[in-house]
Length: 142
Image (cartoon, rainbow, N blue to C red; front, side, top):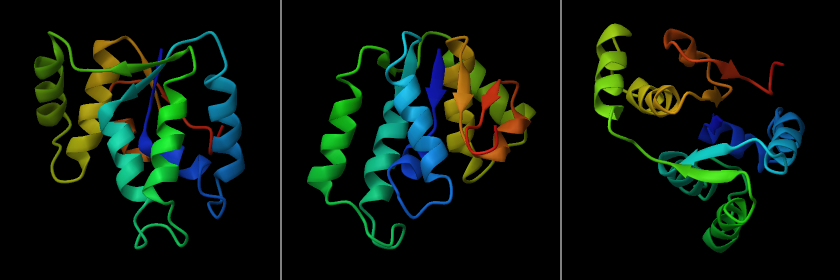
């Protein structure tokens, strides 16, 4: 399984992003493959929050459009919601302390903990994930 970070989705749906084509292709390929793709609610919420924000996107999506995009992800067979399980807190708290996480990196640790708990990799363009013991796939640089 591969767990998707919001930045990949944001690049894929923002034609002005320099990584738009690479991320759009990655999403199309992975969301139509037989391999499972994990979408945490955290990722979906971030996509909705940022893609509709005029301070973040030059041409933000209307909420109706952003919601329709997010809904379409769950209609593809490999996509499933990834939620914290029984060992999540232990993994998450260890990441927070071992990687000396604070501030905005807490969200990265939360996503990394979900991936670790599920034996998954993380698809992200965020280099901060190098601090965690998780395999990273970066379609923006691969």
